[in-house]
Image (cartoon, rainbow, N blue to C red; front, side, top):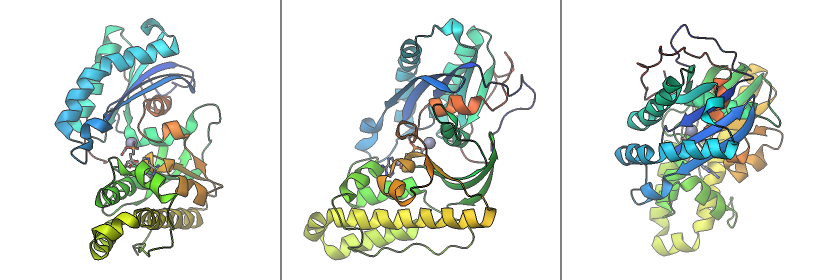
Length: 336
Ligand code: KG4
Ligand code: ZN
């Protein structure tokens, strides 16, 4: 998955003090990680800024990253009580994500690394989510089967060693987090919608309405039919009824997403023989999903949604580039 140029100073970043930046979407984040211990993890969310548009506006995101990146890095160093001189490597998300947003983090990281002639580690955002499981105090050791469910991706990954994973399932249309966000929008809830649906669903009956789980061959996912089913349900019930049954709608809709994810994880485990299950990404914060998989390992709540500690964690197992080999490094928008 990782897209790193050949060459560089190697992957032995395990005992190294890393400063990492993450700006792939609408969170400006910086973290300081020392040998797997998170010394600081600062996340400044732009969610409020994008809420009125019902989704992330790329140009607004880039401009906000530009304003926030220096103060967020400064705060990460302050909270970690680490002067910049002590940092040994700089890591940053290279992609996938919004290119304009990514470039702000990449440029800032290049400047920080180049000013101190430090090695530089470009990190794949998805590897970052998986690596949220490798941090102290209870790092997970592969092999395991990992569900990565976020706003942009839904992947089933066979993780046999750190820094290396095989994709065995993906979504054919919407990501699971996107399904939550679009569902929330149909129900008139705020953005991002996953946490809102999660909260509202606790007051509802998940069996109240019946929503379908898509039948897709193999280990892939599909959520667009579910979203359409909610659209029809909302239309058929009418505004007043939707208002009084909103919690039931949220609970039933969430239950369908959770069923689809759990089903695939169990099928994937059967097919790969990987018994240990793990869940990462924004949707891993979902309380119904956590309850449905009591034996699975979930990323710590603070590290489910985008953050830079997971990027630093992945950087420990990714090759670093020597100064100044990284100065021409570019962002990439989508998964290879
Ligand atoms: O990993 P993430 O921060 O960003 C991407 O890489 O996409 O994931 C954000 C997604 C959003 O779609 C959001 O609605 C969803 O994670 N999310 C949740 C919950 N908290 C965040 N979905 C369901 N339940 C939650 N509690
Ligand atoms: Zn993410």
